[in-house]
Image (cartoon, rainbow, N blue to C red):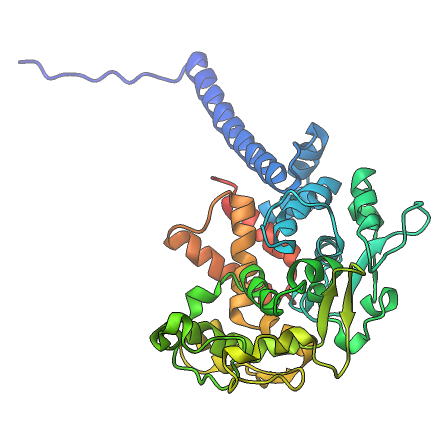
Length: 391
């Protein structure tokens, strides 16, 4: 049998042309992939598609995915739509996005725009109002006209929100302001009627991403539980010992920080009564007359010990204080607060919750960067968008 002789084929012009076409195709695919990823980042953050010119500029500048995200956040729609929808559910008990713009939402939007450290959102003497000269209503403690007018007129929030001390546009003393917790919107939603426990519960839900049922701890002492909580609901003390005490033993000592606040339904405004406990803290004393009688607005965090120490309370704070401002500082400097902000952004930008080890690792990394970067929320949005751009 004759050996098989392989014939070497020399490259021809056709072969070279085919090779060139293949290389062009590969480069084009890579180019299109980057462009599509940048477009996806822009769509998710701004809620509107970028122009071809914007995409061209991003590619010409060799923008990184995080650079692309920062460019997307320059679009006014990021503030008027994406952030408005991001924040609004925090401002009402129904947790609905279908609520008007208000001072709580506007303040968060302004803080994110201005890179204000977000670990002051529950304690700062701060509110964002409309820029003067636009013919807008003045900020009012008794109505939401300013913000509803801004929304009705489609005012560009990126360009027309300005910061002001909350104490300068209200009669609340600077020491009694507590960021968004003492905004009119939060007061109307969470200080109205009731016992002011709603403000504590919804602050936990909105800013630490946890509800009371998730952190029940029946090992804490019940000495600060108010008189209005029955120790034998339905005649069965076991219900109190095995259920009620799990929430109230930690909640009541901290909710005492709000003892001087109330939302007056007649005046439609927040009322602060310095050194005078609101009557709502003393209601239903016969439910358990030996229960705690609130004397002032001093609070203590019993959850610094026991299983809820895992919420990561700051070692630079004492875990005790007076008034809402210092309680806000306690909450906003916890590990749970930082983790919560990143998880909320992840869900907003990625359209899903973190679901696997890769997601959780990315969240942990972004949380670390969030803390080390002075609690800058735009960085959180940019890093999250970069991570999810391939979804």
